[in-house]
Length: 424
Length: 169
Image (cartoon, rainbow over all chains, first blue to last red):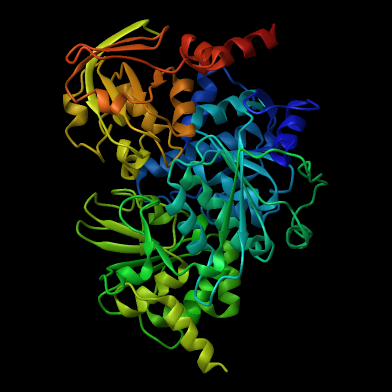
């Protein structure tokens, strides 16, 4: 069996499972965000009175942090009152950040767990060897009522990454390149595992970005086998015991794919689908109105640090605005202490409350018609960040900073190479 | 669930994402009636006004990709969608629709066999799809028994309600 299958088998109380089998799995942690007051309504519609297991539920107010309308405020109030009434202690309010970062910051994510959240990017947690997948409000309400959820055992694809990323090229460029080759529906219903020297050398932050983006090829879950990097990261965070699993050596993958990341140059997903990927060099000079650095994909301290490196002592171009949204309050603090926030504020950046912000077009950095945005986020669908006649290019945090500096799409690898030359 | 569904087709392309089915600016709405007013607004602003209960949505591959927002399925149910036929569905949208009791079927070549405005007749039990305007007949993939049972029960809420009630007895 594959590690993903072993996790699901354990959660279903079985010794073995097979691809395609439908299991009723115990959920170790279920997370609800503030887009989903419907979860509570559905729970009541099902006749739910008390949640099955309040200590295995968390609510995170991230999509509207803090509320910008009365309706948003009402929805958040409903959630706060529900948590209070049900004895749910893991309520993270509007001062926390994006759910996927907050759960990691607070040690709620660990290898071998089943994590279900009302957010499509729950694949992120494959970075820790967890089974993470997104669902809607009603599925989550089923978990609130029963502690379990039916899941189909997925086919699993293994992607081998070899080589070293060039200077100014990041894991975001690699995953955009891969999605561009495979397509937005390549991995529908499937699990995606990453292996190889170019994976084990990644930081936790980079592994999270890699697994996060598998959602954009349709994946159900992602997986990276936990190693010393994982355990070192988790050791002061996770309080409870956990039991990682490993795939059997004879496991038969549905497909095996191979990419050498050393040949990858900076990439952009161009309007208006994530698999519409082109080399950034083809698009240099495209005017940019807004450069957006943030989200569960590209808003961590390492991402803010690379932007600060590029913009140190410089000014954001007068025709462009740079919006920075740290993924969480802890990320914000880390970047503040390192001095990166100061560098970016001095360069003219606008900082926004940690959370989902304009990544999904709800508030704090919405685009007008005809505007062009470059973002370190995960989706560039029509109207995703505002007007349906605005467009979004997705790239690495460095590509976002390079565009903010120049007022148009510019090659971050040239800038990074120059900075490295100067520092010699 | 209705056994035979007859309605006019509204055809959309591949990778129709949930931001187009239900734009992010309306995510704070909670009531199904309010949500339905913005169905498909990101793809076709006139859709909600023109769509008649029982009409049929036809999509290409990866229908409903992107965000997990259940609003997308709620919106299409609120306008009275008879059935959604697509070449493949994104997994969260698929689960959301089934959970709400909104019928959908996978039919591999459907988008090339149907034009917007065609009248379709869909037999849910057999998966047969007849296009009254072209005479074409297609067969959708059979649904897994597990999923079909949820749909037949009118979604997962009545099933869980029964399960919870039996625990209390």
